[in-house]
Length: 71
Image 1 (cartoon, rainbow, N blue to C red):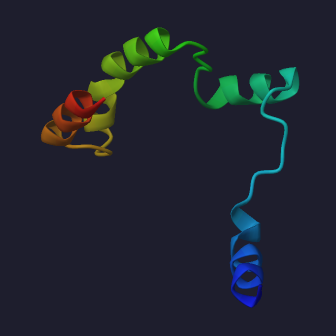
Image 2: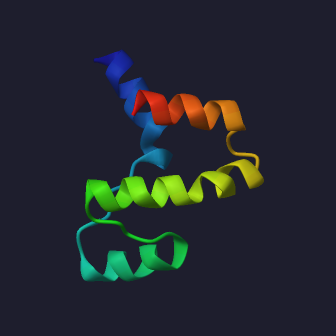
Image 3: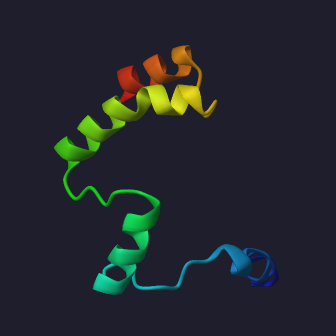
């Protein structure tokens, strides 16, 4: 129990306890990223954004290929 308590206390700052299903949350989220609600649309968005990932140095070109092949 002491170990579990330690991890709960340590992770408290990273826990999300909001409501990610509310209309209010959806409005906030749209300002950051589009809220794509289906897998096919999300995959299309991912493919279109690959250059953005590379451009912003989030992933390298080879990493994007690996991610696409493993999906």
